[in-house]
Image 1 (cartoon, rainbow, N blue to C red):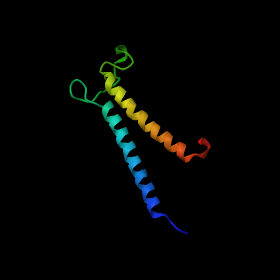
Image 2 (cartoon, rainbow, N blue to C red):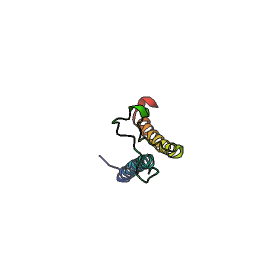
Image 3 (cartoon, one colour):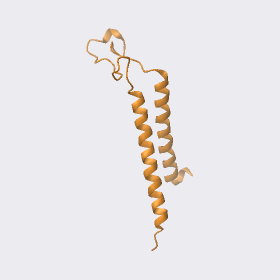
Image 4 (cartoon, rainbow, N blue to C red):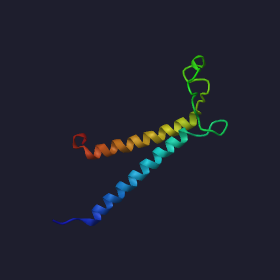
Length: 95
């Protein structure tokens, strides 16, 4: 039995690199979504206590701006595409 060590190292390196890239992009998406609000604090919806008349999100709700939502959506879409491509490569019925 002969092992091609250079190919094994290449596969391991690409796997680790791709994993780190997906984790970093996902973390960036989460960070963009949890950006600071108008007072410098993270966005948060009301605690729900006594906020029934204020609408479905409560009185303390702050809506995120469209650009951070768009950027976070792109980050999550990139992660989804990477996972889907990995599944495509692994599952032979998709070829």
